[in-house]
Image (cartoon, rainbow, N blue to C red; front, side, top):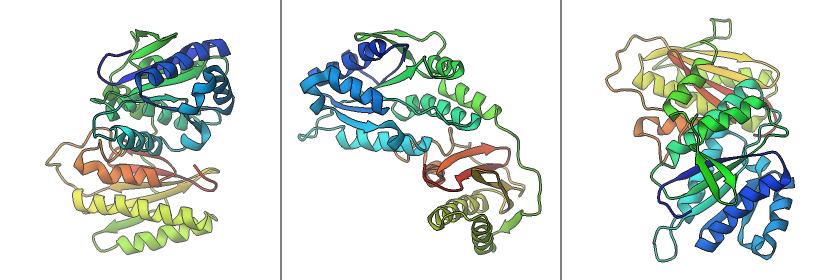
Length: 320
């Protein structure tokens, strides 16, 4: 595979042999070409690929998928930073990175699954114009049919094994696919007793109230700090670039603290909103949305734009 441009393929396999037909040939093609090869896989597939590559496996960097695939925007930013760091050789010439990246789908809620589908689509935006290669394995033996179907819509090509590939006739433009994901999200939260109004002079009050809310739920201290910092950034952006006032709505369930920042000031935007708000890494985001990307990476979960606001979902405990 020597053609220029970014290549993003889905490898839908139903056997160990099917996985190795695609993944081993993909890795060996990269090693023969002098590419940097990274394999982010489930432990079992790391073992399979290591044995298949034999002595050459020491030339591949292996990472456990559950150590890498925590938060979609953080994962995308991590891949972007990895490729940027290894995208040139010692002489400063462009160098290609080849990745086998296996998302973690097990144990995800419905909206978490949708967020990871969106991530797969946004990969094409984040790496557009690069010469890197990304192969995403999908195990049809264990994954829900809807997840496997989504691979044909988020990957321009489908790997056929032994280095072959075919265009996906179901591939959707990332803007269209992400719009479908957004349309499936619930609407804005209704007003409630925990709502916190804010304006230009009440950002400190928002921080204090949110900190108290999190502590009452026994959210770990570091997670509380991250939550307060991320929500404060969205509130400040709302005041500066929105109507100057709004409301922070707080809710929680067994897994998440939900913080929705709604802009209720009347204002007519002077510039169009950036595409894919809060999802692209800073190096690929438009200037107005760099803060959104940093917010989502600190959110330990997902950031959604809906209506006049943004909703941030924070894990109540544990790590992402």
